[in-house]
Image (cartoon, rainbow, N blue to C red):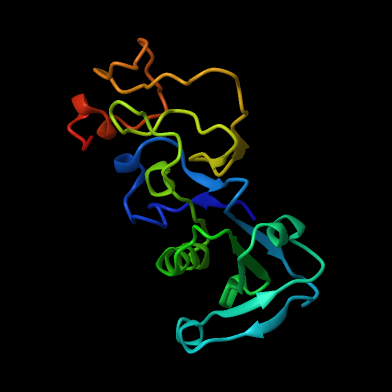
Length: 187
């Protein structure tokens, strides 16, 4: 199943055109992943009233998600209806309950949850506060649903915001114009 990015950040509920930067789906300390559970191996370990009212139960899969087991806490949920065979996991302490709720809603709609660099306070320009065009060490998702990893390279990535003192004449063609000061977006 191809997962396209959800229309908005699971953290701040803003569209990518307002957040800028990259759509982060995983860091070494937290993230989101899916597993297809064709054989029903995921076992229910807890179902709270809040989860049950949303039509979602908490699951644990003992055979998979070794990375998530290292990044506690991890919460796993089985989706409903046409995505019944999909188990989603949110790992790491950064996933607040409301972020998980938004992420589950996105996954249930068949789209990939993501967090913006502002919500994660990850690779923001020290001068202007806008997200930079790279997020070293992060896994991100593009418009076409392609997940990719930002390599960790030596050096300090330049800011792509026009007018910022750290801008070295670079403009990132992937940065939405509405996030730039000249595009009428918020700084």
